[in-house]
Length: 260
DNA sequence: CGTATTGTTATATA
DNA sequence: TTATATAACAATAC
Image (cartoon, rainbow, N blue to C red):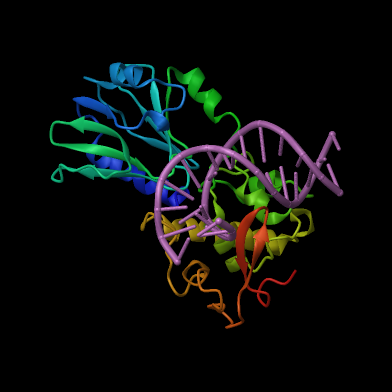
């Protein structure tokens, strides 16, 4: 699930509850989510310290450790999430790492463990971790977008390529292309100015609309609200939606609004 | 048993 | 060399 709006939601959870408060303990319940860091080192780096304001780049959540050079780096894969609890003493079975504070705890939850939690010891290491990622999708300009998209490739896989643009996943990409009326297999180099304008405009509009809810909202007026129905129809024109695979991912589009 | 899954990466194939 | 496809990762759900 986690795409840019979801991670933005997790950033808010972190900022609201866990920033500037002393970490009283780190409970690694499943070390399978630790990437390049041991539970011991994570505990030693964090315990007794405080987190600074978290930042987000694409689907990465970056949380500096105050008073140290280190930054904790979280990625949520397909099934990760972040939860604050100040009442429920029972962790969820998929809570893999729990950060304890005096008045509650922050739980890194992830069913599938496809990604996980890293610790960049300094800013150089942090830059290295993010060196392969393109600009954040939320702030990319229209000109940047046009310059970045590799011309020969299919539009949807190009949008989802994190080294091109950081933050878009499968659902967001389909939603954006549907609203921009562009077929997912179009070649970026074939788009005219008006089409590029629509792509950029709808990219921003979908992100801005999705961020307050912290997810791609499955509203009936959105493509995302209809994609799970095999016989679902286009919210705009009523045509039966097409289902297929593009770039190896399940893809939904309207054959009328998004002609090939 | 089989199928599928919102992310990423390595490897294979054309 | 380039673009695309596939498998793998892990843990489910149908």
